[in-house]
Length: 394
Image (cartoon, rainbow, N blue to C red; front, side, top):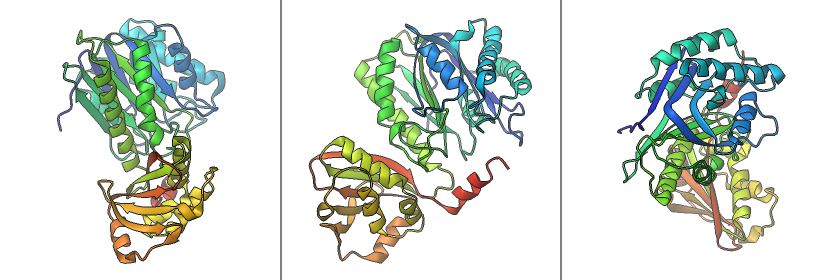
């Protein structure tokens, strides 16, 4: 698949010793000119130093940015004043080499919470990153921001106006709705105002990164940034741009779930027939996060009772006698009804198992209340998830 590169951006990713296995661990995105910028951040009340710093910078009137520095190895979270100072000093090192103000350099971090940045390694990495920058550096940068990810996550699109948008993301664990340990940086050569970017990004995040679950844990560092440098000298149709941005974010969000730690299945949890969209969303999130449901997904066990039980403690009013449940195929089409009126149907157990052994499918729960719907993308919970997270630091 062709990867489109927006004009005026250069990237690099390399290894500087932040990881113990000499993999790429630091990345830099630079625009040749100042960018209008918007961002969406974690809703966790415990926020990492780079999140606090970036939020303050983007709170300014008409914020601009020239660069985004991303490190792995340390989340730079719960590191106090030292963490804030390290985030600022990292940005200042980049700014000095680029010849721009430090406030035009945003910083993102991912890795172990409570571990201070290795500033010696950061300095060496930054000094090597700047001369390595190139327009085609997206793959190397996407690889450098990975932690427990097994593959880089990239997406791009060219609009009818010729405007290009490209993005990279990382995330495999600590993934829950309302953002999770995920970082995403999107660059476009469109000419758009920060207000327009902010409105479009929030709409796109709600339809993408806020609809994914791996384990239900919310990170301290979640960040999605959108930078527009205007290098195409084109202001695209706002509706077309917004739709393209949403589609790109959905592609990146789904890639995170498909690469969930230890995941073997990508499952869409769809809730229909709700009294309100908020009710449908709450039920879908509860099902998608339930460890018992997710382990049944892993074992291809059509244990529908776990799904109904999860719906029942989602904190919303529902009538068990109105519930209906289907299995969906990879295209989201209902192929088998498991429950009708809150009771099991005479479904084919072996056929259900066969479907659930495939890598992409879904479930649809109808609440029998109304017409509102919602969905969440989730994955199964396997033995490997425990292994990965049981030894994350050791």
